[in-house]
Length: 387
Image (cartoon, helix red, strand yellow):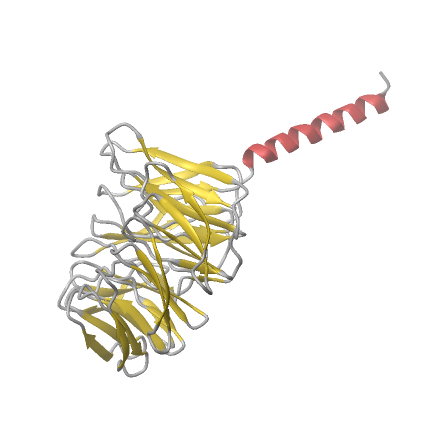
């Protein structure tokens, strides 16, 4: 073999070796930016993308057998670039490479079960747990950057605004921490547990409390702008759109308040308890109920436009992408409806698994988790992508 041939062969081998190493070492792209629960810091659940109007491909991305019969399901996933982050009831937070369908890392908390959806902001994952701690992890490696302990469980999904991480705790406080260091900047005390995930708009943070109030607090002065008393605990996450605040209460009403003054504009009472957070898009409020119906209400007047009946209770918040609203039901289905008239476009039947979480839409795919409370040892939860 000539020297030229040997050199060419060696170069080809080197390139193949390098490509092989690159394939093994390739890491998914974690998008920079803000990826909070409910699509944006206003918590509207309206995604700036189109979702599938029909399903041509189903991908089972992750399954989890639960020792106590619980899997993936209550907490919603968050998608940042090519990575999905989600909490499971085995006390772990998972990072999943969506492109290669493999686990990147997992982080164990100190409590079994978590209903807290994480937030991803500029390469950091922020999430709370029932062990009373809010944590900040590196989004690529899962390495802990800092932790902050409160006086109660943290089921409120955090939001990042102006270098502050804002979240509630069952100790009755809304906390504001330094996003980089985790140091406490300030706290706002209520008279009940704060499981509501805060929403931010126009330098004001809005959140509910088990003391039956919805609060509006100025981020600059830390003073109360207003508070609105309902007839029951406010666990729901508010949605801010068009100068209005939309939320549900355990008193079975859906409320619409003026975001600036806190004055009530309208209220609507479904046929049963309102458990799910709202989605607001293009002048319509979408909200599920324990009566098994998804309601579409006029955002200005509260008048009912349409309702869609399922065969199970609706716990999770609906999500809107383009002309489609997506939501899950305890009847073991994920639904896609036309936003104009509430016509069913398709439904995905999980088989034996209820859908409790809020779906997430990214890159033309709808992602959701489902959960079963069946016998120990079965595959009781999964993260699924439909496109």
